[in-house]
Image 1 (spheres, rainbow, N blue to C red):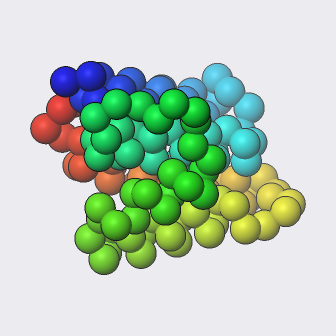
Image 2 (image 1 turned 60 degrees about the horizontal axis):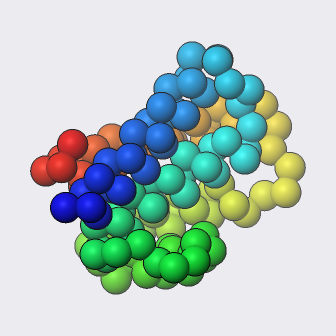
Length: 118
């Protein structure tokens, strides 16, 4: 049951941060967008383990652990989104707005995956 609570908490944080970015309460930055993505990954990962890891996982390690639990289409979607968020060095305002729109779909994806526990 604890893993449900962790998954729900990570999702709620990701959704809350996303809403703050959408409404303009937070400054739109690549770090904030990446944080939404990573919190979503942590929510998915929390469903696959019974107890939390002793030390926090790196984003790469977290991503590698989640991929085998996903369908092919889900895997492709997350890989594409990860590449968009972590590939470029400099993002202009238009790039950030496009990424924010992409994260709207990601939040919907997370809601579907976590539907039984939300």
